[in-house]
Amino acid sequence: MTTRIDTRFAELKKAGRAAFVTFVMAGDPDPATSLEIIKALPKAGADVIELGMPFTDPMADGPSIQAAGLRALKAGMTLKKTLDLVRGFRKYDNATPIVLMGYYNPIYIYGVDKFLGDAKSAGIDGLIIVDLPPEEDDELCLPAMKAGLNFIRLATPTTDDKRLPAVLANTSGFVYYVSIAGITGAAEADANAVGDAVARIKRHTKLPICVGFGIRTPEAARAIAEKANGSVVGTALVDALKNSLDAEGRATAKTVNAVAELTAALAQGVKGAQQAAE
Image 1 (tube, rainbow, N blue to C red):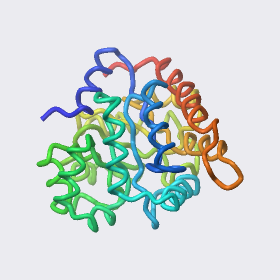
Image 2: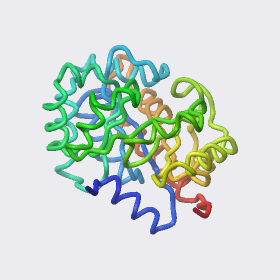
Image 3: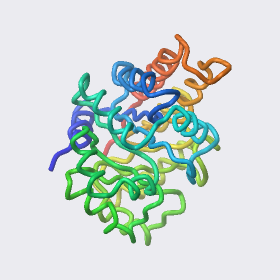
């Protein structure tokens, strides 16, 4: 099984550069604007799109992404509508990988088998489910792999060498390394510490390693891209979106461009990175 994610990372490796992975919340600030935003991301330089599944009770999200989820829910976003959003995107772009990121509860309520079938047909390539540890692989991870979706696992600064094999056992697509011990947007990533962590994880896996949490500027994205196979930015993009809204939290003429312009600047940072030898 080769997914769009596998294809994209193979292309990037051949080109000798890291991936730029963007995170936005599905349906933020409303479904129509959200579609325009995700359509704009690849043109602005995003290699992979992580799409947040809005949820009322997130545990890993900082204030900015929590607020984005609440805006989306207020605008009527559901998991079904998130899949419809991806279907809409696929009419314009059949190459850019899309990863759904979020929590298990909405999937459980939707029904695992129905969700996996609908996600695959909508054009989803992978899942990052923050609150499902390896011990629960039978719940979603193994059925997802059977359905042809990558199941991408998080590794953190507290994931030691003893724990890593379990975390990596059924992981595919890429490994998402969380650069800080905490929630999204809470602190800045330390490129040197990240470099050491990536080197340690690479001793256990041949999968690409992308690093997220705490990357807000083109300079930071570049520094991380020099140490890893990809830089992931979410909070900064969500903040750019929020700052473009009107007083009632509605989209304005500036909203799509605000996200696209920051994406382009961050992408230039990543593309300017000198890749360390494998």
